[in-house]
Length: 203
Image 1 (spheres, rainbow, N blue to C red):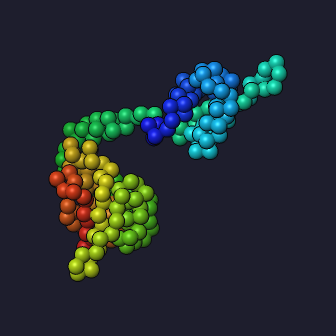
Image 2: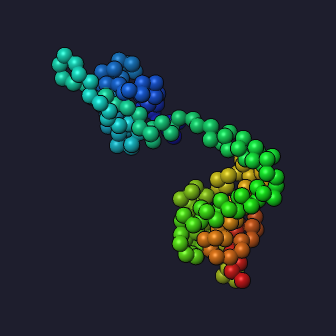
Image 3: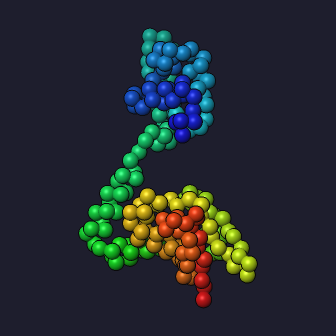
């Protein structure tokens, strides 16, 4: 998201990253070599978006200075290596417990996620809503016989699943637990598919 901002806002957030105690408008203006008015405008926009928050006031010989800090949401704009950690963890777990146990672990995690989302069985539309909240970009497609399929245009675990296909079992268990049936994985991006397609068979 930083890339979608103007240079001044990027530099302002970067300055606050290096000063966790906060900076005043005057300090930011001097650091970035822009006017106090411009800093005020940028801070108002960033505060509105939840990226910056007001911290303590600092006493001066005159009027106390308001300090501005990077919010937790603002910190998340800077690079994080979650994927690297996930790769290392999955690889280590796979080596320790083996293929079959990793499959069981992924299925258990999928069911656990489902239990936190719903207390009863839901339909495909509701499942797609939950998936979209997690970033799957899912939609429902009705086939010629009226059978609904869940089509996900984004695989949120793609890098992990490419190295460890067992990770796909989490998706299958999640969808199956929410929908109350067995899930057929009709197409998979990891297996060279264009999308991931799922059909729930409720028998």
